Image 1 (cartoon, one colour):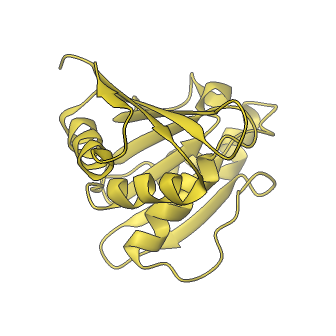
Image 2: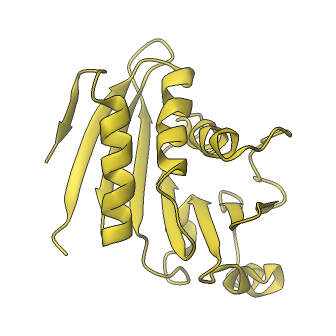
Length: 168
């Protein structure tokens, strides 16, 4: 599949949550979505949008210290990983992370570069970066599979009214 990219400036955290909500509707079992960007870029905010759209009413926190949060829904198992503190590949085995990547699960992985050699190929790569000043951020998406393309299309359609957004 040819890689397609999408880029959009999001003005504030609610817009980031809206992008996550749009992503939620296109997620299916077996998917991996990676979330990259510096601390405070909005990765967990985007995940919060996914979870709220799927019906999760409880707290949504970054799993920076636990490394993993599990959200069981009736139709999928959603795993939210945060590998910011990941220091030793042995942690991957101790965590049992490989067991989470199944056809019935969706895995959202923050800081994927810290486990690059251990992760399966991502369907959708999400990059977030803070904008200069204010609460805005830049969202960049790269789809690498048909499932990832479906997710990108859903986000693009939801954000179409928010310029400046562009496909490449």
